[in-house]
Length: 537
Figure 1 (cartoon, rainbow, N blue to C red):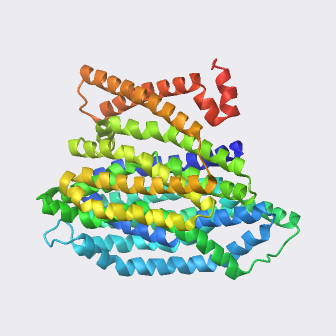
Figure 2: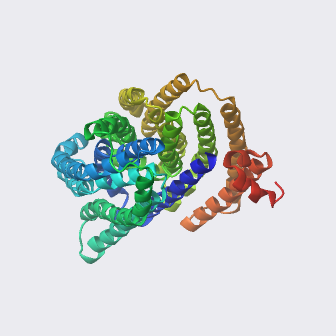
């Protein structure tokens, strides 16, 4: 059980880590090409696009993996195949419909965002970039369906590799397109941003090609399982299949929409709230820092949660279907501990080194670094939320997922404007944190009541991990301060050197103490134990 969980999680985690790193690194040259003022225009396109994807398809991979894993555990491989065959056309239609909806709503959305005729961007500027990004919606539903099918068979590699290729192709076209538009064809920054968001469509097509290759490669294995099960046709009707899939998908469609919806709430309230306090001149710039530049860095640790949630769904579904509550509890214990063990130091480390990170990736900015320092710890909440919802999904508590999500969103919506007026960008961060905390606490209460889940070991280990992190961060801060006494950081290379030295010392301390206490061995199992014994741990 532990090896399956770790293997699947690590495959997805590595793929998502590489994808996330690329998704941050490309921002460095792109930011230099278009400038600080135009970054927010890019985000104006991506937030409604992310919401449309979340509503249309974000629940599909997890729902399909859950469905396939459930029937595979029962020895019924035919039902999962029947789902995929019948859903291809449906997903194609969904993609085309989603494209038309987003394309048609481009101008109304732009009117919600741009209220002042004297604003830096016009309504038409925002509408144009939304229309360009809408083309990607055509391809994504089919891509999501196939990824979910692979995950239901515990094949995580196709998802990880296709995500990586999607990111690589998208980034190549973003950077090449922006460079050609501005330096060869003499176009404007707005045109460059339009081409950059269209690259999402090209990346999705590349991902679909990779998934098709894996489908051809793994098809003999799927056919063998189908034949050995002695059941080539499914007894489950299409009506019942789609009814069950809908029950699984709707909660996770709403789960996938939480982060972009929180950003959308910022989009439609931030500028207005800042205008009320006389900060209209810097509103677009601050919003770009909050929703794009710092958000890119904050989401790096969150990829761990994505890997866990994708792997948890089929595993917990299988154990829950078999009424094996001991393995369910072990899965939960292990997942919570590993997630905190990896996410906590990454999020807090970015916060402590916020000045250097912002300088390396973007430019030297006290405001930007301050936003990043305050926003980075929220990554821990971003990581916990999908895992807790994945658990509820695995134990068929879809209604509670929806209720808890709506309460979290309502909290953000109610608090956002007054908190922004009081604390500017910190107010938006605080409203996001409170909204997530509400949803996470409600999820944990539901898990505890349903599974009678109480784990003292998770509480003890959380306290231990937190203590080690506090000591580690003190070392990182001292190291950073010491380097600052030797020389003033005036270049990106010097800032990168500070990050490298400070992070290396922090990671070495964290790893040494975790191994010496046996914490890492207990979390990661026999493989790391065999490895660490060679070094005397």
